[in-house]
Length: 145
Image 1 (cartoon, rainbow, N blue to C red):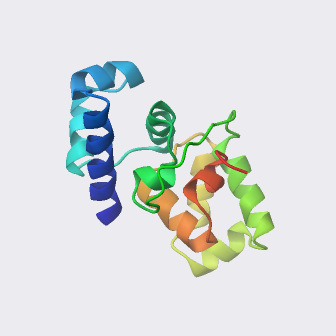
Image 2 (cartoon, rainbow, N blue to C red):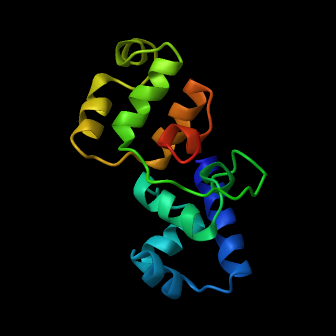
């Protein structure tokens, strides 16, 4: 839960710097203001799609947003590949397979099947995968090369 609260702190900080209220920001990124309030409190999880939208809006890395990095680096996002495609690429680079993750982590094959069918991964899963794969979240999702 630490990363959700850190995300909430960073989001609140960035919104304050930009002088944005939850209602205004929610209309900008097209989510409910109650979702923004939950994110800021660290009560609600955020999916990858919304996380990328927030990072793009504030022109920062996802790793900075969730507290995995203290560098407020500017990321110029390219068009993101579909998450399952990017995950396969990273797994291949790391010499791992879905099978090895299925056997050695909580990421059973059903996760990959759901993602292949269009389910959007949630922040806790993205963080855990980045930790397992020893890479940045931005790299894992295709925001940096």
